[in-house]
Length: 427
Image (cartoon, rainbow, N blue to C red):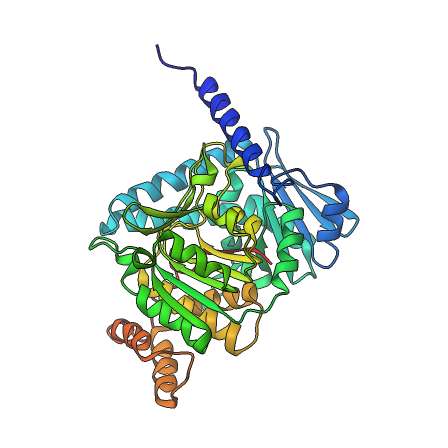
């Protein structure tokens, strides 16, 4: 006899509660995932709006919190059933793409589905929220349930302007995400720390894994901004213990590797360092980190399981709790070239131009999206000629060898799947 699906859900929920209690038993983690008080929420929203988003059977709701003021925004079309349908279509297309990344039809279906879902996100979710948020220039989103699996920062609307046919959420609003108000406040305290020491960790690479083809160049880009205070290690060579020890001495960690989530045992979620070697949240929690930023580059590092997503302890959530002020993580598979360009521009804007990390990510995404191939080539060739320290020669050549073969006026990486995969979680 087949087990009742509801019994499976209850069993998974019970297992998850047991693991959460195990985490809370660790010194310093007694409040892990506990519901914040309104004072917690009001304090977190004192200087910047905090937006809670949720779907229900009869329609959705946004709560925009500004200090002690709370504005209720009905989202009548955001029903649980509609959200489930959108997420189902999204993951069906993504699953087909993930299984065969070299199939042009699968790529086109995934790209079209991302367009459709983000169009819906504007119409039924973000349009009214954006209108109510004005004139705020930034906001932190706390997205409940399945909504947390979708790229709200990439929601868009048509403009009617052939030069700029779409307007995206991030064109008007600097968006970051947080699991709750308490973790956001803690992240802000950690974000006030200096960021002088970098640890870059390279994960395993397989012949089938194009996402890591430029990982060494990417680590060089990150290291170039920290000089002698940068350390680059291969995860397999350093081992779990070596990487864990090095993280204690770092202010910024940059992982170029896969992440994975374990629904029933969140402490076993982690980062692949080598075959059969993974740095899990269990080890990370034990480190008592004090990181300004964790950059989880490459594939799926912020993608939790889709069952019981309200309660999944994802890698970004766990890292915030373990002692990171902010986390940059990806929501889906992304090719190595746009990832490399994005990281070049992210670190340049943060470390050279002095932008806050989440602003640097936003600017890098918009630049990747909007800049023609020929302009990227021009900028990088001029940087090489000038000996700009933010652009290592090897990284520049990887980008130039690709883009110089493409039409100069085209924007190869303007599609949502290419520029919007990374999200900023925390402060």
